[in-house]
Image 1 (cartoon, helix red, strand yellow):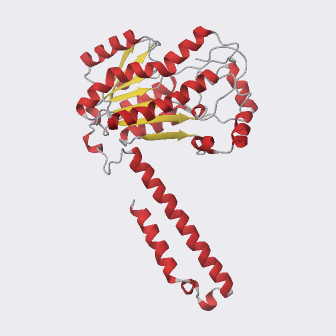
Image 2 (cartoon, rainbow, N blue to C red):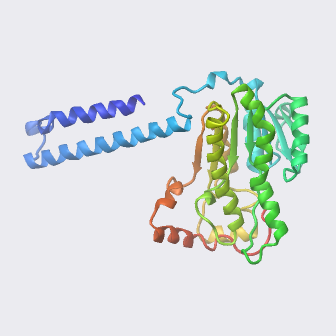
Image 3 (cartoon, helix red, strand yellow):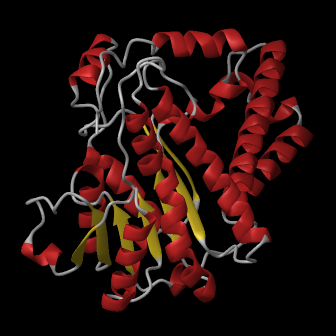
Length: 340
């Protein structure tokens, strides 16, 4: 914020000073017209930089629910409890390990057992609850056990997700339902279970893993794209309800949009060949987890774009440009099968 006002002040000073500010006599072998052009260019550059910085400041303020201060000091990591869905393997396991590094107790909800990558020191802070997140009853049962064993969680990371590789006409309905239940509907169940305690304490952080597919629909992965764009709507609505229905803007929310990441989904032959054909560089699960946990520890809300920064702006581009971008990704997903 301070830098933004310094830039604005510098622009005003440069504007009032006029071209003589740049007239250093013989030290600059420039004509008067060139000096005026340079001065004008500096003015515009400084103005654009100030506008960019001011816009960034407003974005951060909006993400912080129009609050000027963060409540980072209210977080005591060794006393916090985090719930991570799909935390046994992949990105979820990396998130759990990094949260445990900060002393946070972690409750893992997963149908798969914990991977062998967890060390004995980490396992002292990691608690596994076998849970089918497609079942509201299973989630409620696990939530009751977590509250009894550890206490009410203050951090919820909805990480679990799967993919399919079917066209719309070839999609088996049971695969479609399962994907929507895991990638989207489970978020309602987990938030319904854990948000009330956060509201009561006016402290919490809800994070969900979406994808760059939130902004670009992929052929043969329409179901996946639908759930990820729906997650973006879910988080926007959640923020509004926290502010205007529950009067609790202190609760943080983050939605994460990673680019293609090394995982069970991208290891599937139906995806692997397509990614290779476009020369895609895959993110490491460790790097995605690092960005997610850094956001939690900073006690910040927001939208993490782990890929091309233009991704959220694609919908604002002319239609022909949007279509060219979608065309370039049309053959990434091929073949048939479930990728998760």
